[in-house]
Image (tube, one colour):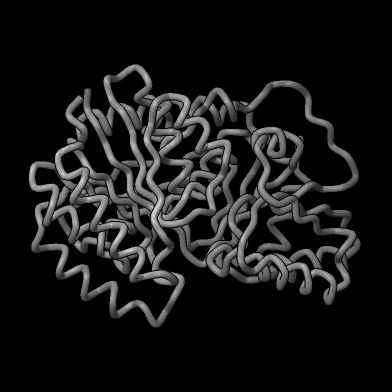
Length: 356
């Protein structure tokens, strides 16, 4: 039995959580156990129940940096108590700001192999950039297995000496279906992801506003929660597009939402390798994404990767809407299945890391 301790912020709806869930599915036939060390009580109960039901232990500390003293004390207590319990400690991060798990693992878990896993290409806090780069130099002093979801994410966190492990998705869940899709007068647009500055949804509102001005019937749905939700609701109201934009919150059946949509939109300012984007490609619907998203994550032909300029996004949506069957492709899921981005590909990649 290989025992792995995953360390990240909390079990909410996000890319790291999706990766860990998909990783467990990929390795379900292996002799491996996942436990979790989280630093937030804001957790998705369904995910917590899932892992507890299969025997995983979930440890939760106070949030950092809000409760940094309590967090430090609880982390020290945990690592001293569980020093010899794990074969691997797998630390997931978007930036090198919270280094306490690394320092604690070096001090207490001397027989445990440490994995650092980069899931993004920037930090959302510009003022924290110097901290990240200082810690990147410090990290080089330690013996770590460095993983990244993309080459860009690897360079951001490690600069060199890393292995790219592409995010894998459950192709059977998001498989593009050959059934005839209904093309109504309304073009159904969708985005999936946290309502944060990174996802750039405010830019999309200007695109929707322009489409409305030009007389196009559209419905834009956003699946996700985030700190900017109230600001986004206010902006929708101020632009007079409340009838065209719907915020769905977190939803479970993302695959059903994609199957009912015509175009997936991802205007992100930066990304590591978006699982939501991979799922959208697998579903067969055309995708319009920003040119800030790594080219390596574009796996299917009906993807439009363009700069963040309103007119270009408006024209892309109009072009897709006018196409036969609105650009839907039945072959996308086959392309994903045959790539490194399926659960099978993820299993092959991670089996060598965990030495299963």
